[in-house]
Amino acid sequence: MDAQDVGTDLERVLLTKEQIAARVQELAAELDRDYAGKDVLLVGVLKGAVMVMADLSRAMRIPVAMDWMAVSSYGSGTRSSGVVRILKDLDADISGRHVLVVEDIIDSGLTLSWLLANLSSREPASVRVCTLLRKPDAAKVHVDVAYVGFDIPNEFVVGYGLDFADRYRNLDAVGTLAPHVYS
Ligand code: XMP
Ligand code: MG
Image (cartoon, rainbow, N blue to C red; front, side, top):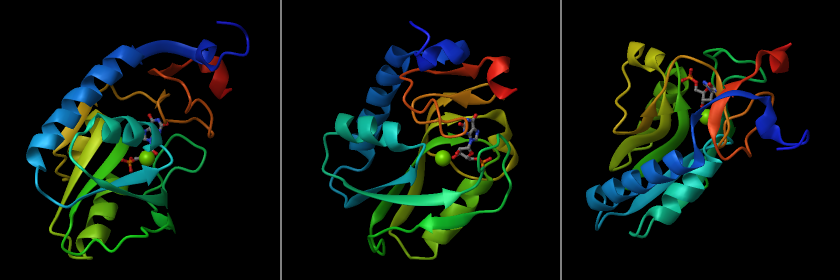
């Protein structure tokens, strides 16, 4: 790695590119079985879920539709504000369809519980959640997450879609940032 490599700002790699790819394959196989024969709409939550959505959907063999939502939760900081706002709504009408929300990470679960209530009010046939990462705090809020890639420690992580001040999303691994980056 040279000085221009975003990976040099990582303190510790939690999940390698290979570990992520292997787990995404497993999740896709599970989804293929569970949603066989159904009208599935994958709903990616921008921007963090872009990488997992791209890899997960391509690892799936059943036909799926894809749509995106953007909601605000964190700004450029590292803690949840609890205030959720729709920045971009779905293009699709989800009534009667099987919706699978694809998330990068569930931390407090505040964003997700708000999102699920919002989507449920549109009368889909079902709504489930698939997240690549889940932190321990997620257990405090009652959100049922059907598919979890990895449970990780309660640390701020970046990479594979996850950002700090909109950077590091393009790392192919997930890791913690070196302290000097925050200061
Ligand atoms: P809550 O707390 O509402 O937060 O479950 C979910 C959203 O917060 C962001 N988030 C993170 N982003 N590294 C990030 O880059 C993290 O460790 C982290 N924890 C939470 C993320 O946008 C997620 O959708
Ligand atoms: Mg997110």
